[in-house]
Image (cartoon, rainbow, N blue to C red; front, side):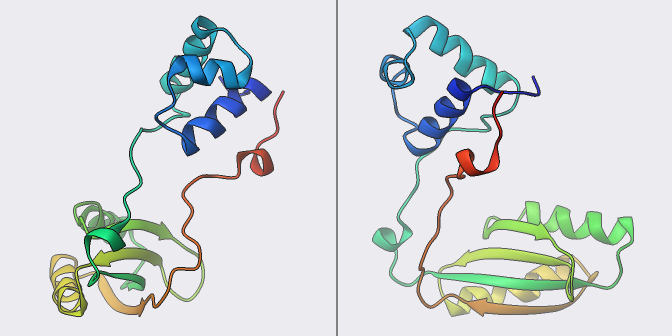
Amino acid sequence: MSLIDAIDLRILSLLQNEGRLTNARLAERVGLSASPCLARTRRLERHGFILRYGASIDIGRLSRQHIVVHTQVTLLDRRAASIAAFERVIKATPEALSCYLVGGDFDYLVKFVCSGMQHLAELMPRLTEACPAIVRYCSFVAITCIKDESALPLSLLVEVA
C-alpha cells in the first residue's frame, strides 16, 4: 500500500488528534458506513501507517519540578559500532523522548525529560559511562514551551491519489 486516498488521510488526521473516537463516530466524520471505515482503519494499521494509540499526558500537572532538555551529542567517530552502541543506550534510556541523527556540527539531537537539574546531572555521566563513543555533549534546558505538537500536518505533507 504505497498510496492513500483522501478518506484514508482524513481517518489518519482524525485519529492522531482524537484517538478515542469510536469507529461509528469516525465513520460518520469521514462519510463512510462503519464497516468500510473499520476495514480502512485496520488496513492502515496493518500497513504501518498507524504506529500506536495513546494519551497525551500533561507532565506539568503531575510535576512542577520536571525539566525538558535538548542535548547535542557528538560521537568519537561515525563507525557502525559507535553508532550502534549509542543508539542502543538511547533506546534503553527512559528519559530520552526522541533522538535524531543529524547533519552538521554534532551527530545526534536528543530530547530528554528529567525530574530536575540533579537528575540531569546524574543522567549525562551515566550515558557517557554506558557509551564511551560519546565524546561531547551540550545540553539546553527549556525555559518555556511555546509549541510542542505531536500531530503531523498531514494535509501539508502528503499528496493523495
